[in-house]
Length: 476
Ligand SMILES: Cc1cc2nc3c(=O)[nH]c(=O)nc-3n(C[C@H](O)[C@H](O)[C@H](O)COP(=O)(O)OP(=O)(O)OC[C@H]3O[C@@H](n4cnc5c(N)ncnc54)[C@H](O)[C@@H]3O)c2cc1C
Image (cartoon, rainbow, N blue to C red):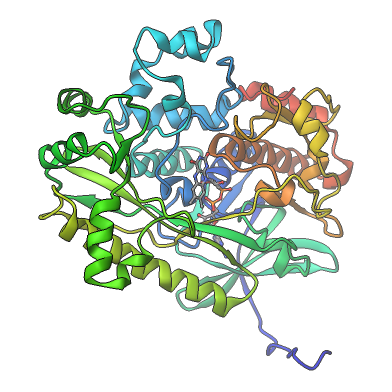
């Protein structure tokens, strides 16, 4: 044993249940995986460290159509991800643009044409379209419960049950100690492949950027609109070319959110009063200061700093501590220096600050197959074992009609009984729609393997493709 390593006291772990499939992580990918596996006939457990579902997708402001639809209006995130989106929007209090858009027309005539008659800029729907995070969480929990998934909330993963390189289940922390769950297949949807790390195969790319979108209530929108309309050099309004008081009031009355960026003058005043306000803004440099006005006097701040690392607990913790401080500082700045915020209150801060592993065109070598950048860029590669056609980001250089994800890219090298999603599967998988689609595919593959009693490496992928098609997913 190396000098800096110690053995942990041997523990006897009580096993509290056995399942066909255990999904770790209750973000958008994890919920889609669990519901898909259950709908494919498997007995499923879902474990999540937070007391709620949704992960980062409920914590970052923008849902948009990132990863859901291509520039021609074709859906690549149908199936469970699209079902979640439609049901969430039907709950109300999301951006009315979701209701205004005719998705059938968009699919037939393209994004630009389909949205023309609504007077909506297609970039607006493609990027920053707000969905209500609590309605989203409610729908996720409803689907999980309707599917009969055994849901373990406030249950962080703390280890794995292993037999050599074969993962046989997971260990989690309950209120009175650790317990185990046996599983024929584990689907690891933690963004950093935490299950694989506990099994001795850490994902080697640990750099993440962090961002937090805390919610604020009690804004006097009339005062705010007056200020931004009178100071066009100070605040830009996203995708609104000439933001007069009347136009902005019209948008707000329809419930359409406004993205505001700048607030340079008030920031200069604040910094002159106290240099602590130099920390306000997103990115380092340039400092962008973004506020989203949602509706009904409520909005969201964009608090962020650059990259940090997940593999060093103290460095990581310092970043998180710094981000928490910046949440309050951002609020104090708006409250004291920006018209309309005098009686505003910081309301909803999320249990974890969202962090995303660095997107990269480089292969990681972590799983059995790395989708080469060339295939992502051109999108014309056909894989016999494709389990999803996905969209990356429309502006990030990938093929305009998406690319295929082969099943092999979900199997980590050197381990048995586990599938991964997100960046451990490919460092270009990032966007909400995309990760949710891959989640659904992983859930179905796990269910089919577990029920057939076949090793993941020997699985007949055509059975997975068949079930995915039955679940309305796009496979090729
Ligand atoms: C600041 C920021 C802005 C972004 N903006 C956009 C955007 O505009 N458009 C877009 O499409 N995407 C955006 N993304 C990316 C997108 O939010 C994520 O890629 C996506 O939500 C990831 O979903 P996931 O289910 O893979 O992971 P997560 O949402 O991270 O879900 C993983 C779940 O696992 C749980 N978990 C972690 N560790 C454990 C453990 N030990 N035990 C139990 N549970 C655990 C977590 O609590 C979490 O719920 C952004 C990301 C960030 C950080």
